[in-house]
Amino acid sequence: MASLRKTLPKDLATLLQQAAAGDEAPAIQALSRCRPDATGGYDKGTVLTQRGCTPGIARWAVARGTDVDAGGTYGRTALMHVAGRQSPSLGIQDLVDLGARLDLTCKAGRTAMHYAADAQNLQAVRELLALGLDPDAPSRDGTPLEHALQRVSNVGLVRMVPVAEALLAAGAVATETARQHVRRAAETFEFHRAGFNADLVEETAQAAEALCRLFDVESPAPRRMHDGVAPIVASPGRWQDQHEELWQLLVPSHGACATVQGEVVRITGRVSGELYRNGGGNWDQGYRDMVTALLGHLASGSALPAADLEEARGIASRLLRDMNSAGRLAELAVAWVAANPGPTPLPPPIYAR
Image (cartoon, rainbow, N blue to C red):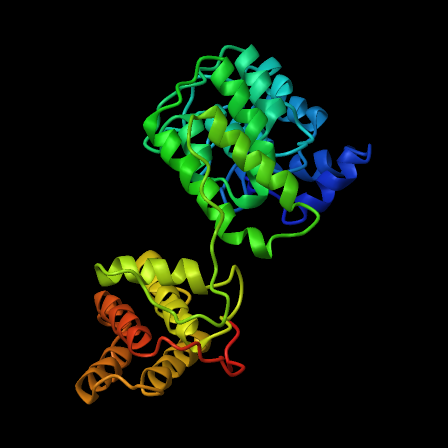
């Protein structure tokens, strides 16, 4: 055993494709040169966790000594991997037949049901429910419903509806947290509706409304966007609320805005989001060009006072060292819009972000 590889073959993905096509022999031959507990992939899991593992290879591996419940770097077992995949080669029942435990959790406390719900994998959800897995199992990310609804994207709304229906019918609780996630998902779709794929928009809109009904959440009002002509004026109040109002009014789903007023709001929102959420991990020339453009916009039209412009330049020079100062740029952007209510067409930007 000491001479066997500790890691899975580098070409395992190709070998598993051959296995799925009916020829398992090359994969088994290569895996025979590896230890039963050999790992690979981003999660450092056994062969059972790898995408494309077939029932035949799984049976061979377990008979040879591979632990059917072995977890990788994040503690995700093969059952969790399979539950979180659409149309996997290896099925849930295949793993259960090999002795997989249903009650295990990953390092984040999630069960296989969390992964099935998050992937909007209705078949896996139904299978796990039939096997007796708790539809309301807690984790640090909440119940399976809460976890899935928090992470669902616009394109996943259609698949999310039957998953939510199945979990609720099995006894999952429509918690206030779940309702908040549904409200956020519906509002996010409404924000992007105008720029959504025309072939999918109606189906997705119906799914968003269906989720709202399931969780007794009021559907968001249709998004009202600026007509490009009227003065741009935010409601009285805190600058943070005004920034959000202007974002909803002026910023499109994708790409730059039609007006300079919208673009100063979009730039400051994008910069703040990148710094606060990602710690500047994606900061590149595109972001630097956006900040440079922002400084030019703030000095245009009815420019901000000289002291404010100097402050903005200072903030721009130290953004990555003083990320909290990004909020001040957003406040200055709101002030510039207030001083320039007449819509100003935006010249083609030099950045693509």
